[in-house]
Image (tube, rainbow, N blue to C red; front, side, top):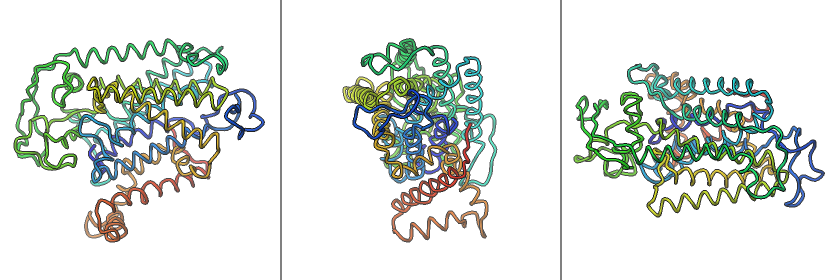
Length: 491
């Protein structure tokens, strides 16, 4: 989680969620043919239902998020503002997961609207969910050690059951089933029905969202968290093998050691199956090098060395709300005729969510916290996602700046491939397997040292440029070649 490849196995998997769909399925969902002039003023109509034109901005948004994911995974360790916040707060890396959940939600109405048979739709959703779970456990459960270690395999006593792909699988399954169950095929375009028309059409979905939120808040603030203990598994720690005790005995606490989110994971999943390197190791209570990672203080509390699952059960339950908000944006895309009508509702909701989250955080009511997936964090990240997508939609689908965003669009259309090869480190792991005289003497090592570090004379700048050029730009160009050849990896 703390930069480098350790984050890639967690954050990067989110890319696959956006890549699960067919690259031909994001079609602009309005009536029979394009409006006469699609470059007209703000009141022009969006492409009509049955049009073959893709909603290109959704691909661009996914590609942008994949690029951000690669950036924070590769450079987050050297640039803390890019990496995850140690606990409360929200850095660049903390926007990646909610952005993917938002994208998955927005794609659901576009995908399922073309499958009128509910039984077939449910089968499709279940199959994709199982595929996501399989890839999540394979790539994030500890089996893959790429790119730094040329080994593979995991002790089943310590396999990590949760992860980014697993969280996306849960959110996708829940929200897609809700969409199928509440879908009304008779609903027509609603652009003239007022601001809250789409809310009313899908009121049952928002009732489910409120129930999820109430259950989450009740558990987080209502569960009593007793004292607990764990065995230190870090072989480099002076306390390796010792059993340490964490004192809690409280309820409604949002601190790292004593929150209900971690307690539920320890009780249900088991402490041996949680993430062993949580971001809180960089917390100011744990190290003097905070927000960078460094040696623990002599008087660091015991919980600094303990595991924690940032994609745990209760936090994944609340993460479903990010996907439901994305679904609402997808409903607006399906039902609204006009570009400007869509943009007005998207931007209004995005700004409202962003302001609500900021108020909750700075009033000290509910802090921003990615690892607990708090309400303020949901609002801020979903609001930001809505605003970013709105800007991309205006530039890509209204103004049609296609060439400017082409590399991001290519990445977004092959996000699963770019995730596995670039973020999960499979391609670098393959290259590292061909070494000369020692495992540290590889092509990847040579490029980093001679092309970037020795040229820029700064490890931090060199790593940042290496990620931007040798990972993001390289894979954007490769994704463009694959797009030209019509090759896509989809789940």
